[in-house]
Length: 181
Image (cartoon, rainbow, N blue to C red; front, side, top):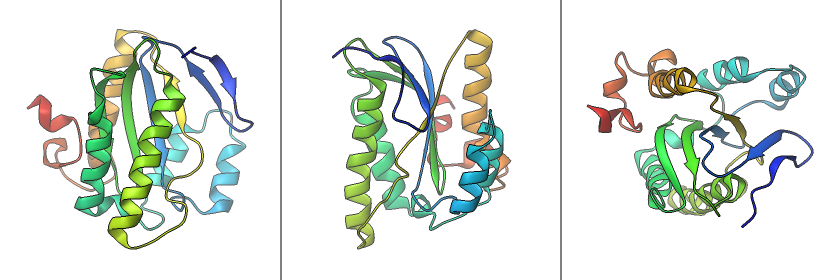
């Protein structure tokens, strides 16, 4: 598989390259009201604002169901060491943060699609529902240096604390933090 470099499907730019560490966020289809999503889309760099809105707990928050969170975590870990190297992750009630390094021949977009496709089918089955589970796109940002890497791991693993879900990141079950203890 050829890595695509910079590309877009018409709404968000993406960067795809082997052995480039990427910070990826994807969210549930109903995680942001459309008016909020549209206003955020007009901002040049909206990651902090978007994450703040997601942390407010909009939508169904299906990922707070432990069986659904487990499906998501298992999907992330399934090809770790084969198609990518999973460095950090956090499954929040309505979105997922992942720090991942794709291997040669494994495109980031294909990996994210695989995670979202599998988890959508399984989550809808577990919840007895149908229809869109994930928002169609995802956010990615490549990691520039060691400092950026360290700050991103901290950001990901502290997201449940920042959102007010737990007082210590070690208390959140659906994060790579518990593997670092």
